[in-house]
Image (cartoon, rainbow, N blue to C red; front, side, top):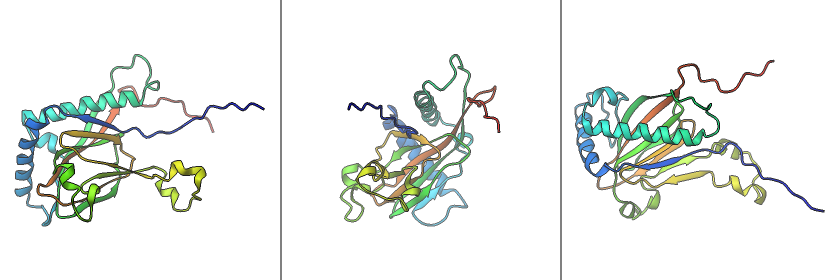
Length: 229
């Protein structure tokens, strides 16, 4: 007896990493600007963690920051086009990309940002402005290689607590993905994907830029007809 079948893998989760070529010139300036914003924020809480308001697009009018925003927009366009290959209608070239909010975060002293998702957007991302080198971070006696990492959680993660786990579904058992931050790298991911900034201890603060984005069509975003009830 001959058996033949095609294995189908549905609902993949896209994640992309882009490199900002101007990072060495732009990041030090952004570090100084962000530090000044934090120092002059009357609502800033004491401690080693700080998150700015999400109004940086309106607040920072510097050519270097605009370079970063342009890089983010171009990377989003390329990633979304690749992720939606074969799904976007042919000839539809007037899609509008809008950053719904851009903010920065600073952490140190073993602070972290717990598991969360982002709303009101289809894509989110994190750009690493400043962090100690990976080899230096990994020498932390408790955190090791996870020192300052960004951890992503499988969409199946909430279901695994009550799932039967054996060798037959070993493909589900690696339920997290840890991204090692590198200065100048941009990580893009669907906004529904749970993620966490792991605790960080370093000589320099861990500084990131984060954002939410929508990609809309002026004539409407519905791709598939609703089924009748």
